[in-house]
Image 1 (cartoon, rainbow, N blue to C red):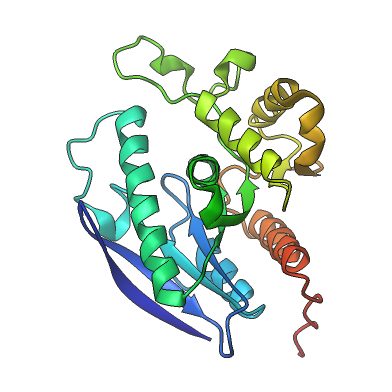
Image 2 (tube, rainbow, N blue to C red; image 1 turned 180 degrees about the horizontal axis):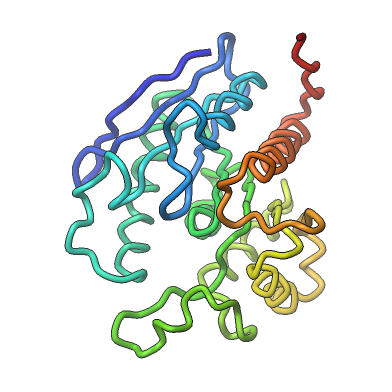
Length: 258
């Protein structure tokens, strides 16, 4: 398995990323989309590094890249203020980075895995470009409408959903599109104690009977959101990797020898 730092050309300038390739032929290609801030997408003990290498052991080639105003992608997005504008920029960067990755690895469709606001982007891309996305894996997904600067609701950020009207329409359309495709159900993993659970519950109400087409995995007694503790990272890594195995029809890998 090898890691390659890459520069991805976009209409906004070069975006930094890392491609992890398995030793043999790749069975699938997956984009890892981190949320804002920690944990970083690089570093020997980074959650995203360990996850990319775990997927590489399963024959999956992965791309982890920096969204706008993150890591090596600075200063792209400098002057972009507020969630709405950053989300619009990140949506465009993801589409261009994904197209570059698909061409590089010769993949017709990609797997998408995202955490928190990274899930937001994965859901939107799956809804807007369903022919380019084979499956989505969502870690503690952020489902609310982004805050509009100057709208007077900045205090609402991070406080938990208040009701169904807080679920972003783009997110709802994304789930509806994924469900209508009738192929691989979107998968969500979340901790029982995450405040995001309120958002997932609101999403279920909006989806109605179609909510059964979303696979939800709840980890009892835990809050996963920050992904900054080894035990939390291991819970998410092992479950996400097992889900990828199931989607690709792969047998579970044998335990590493001591």
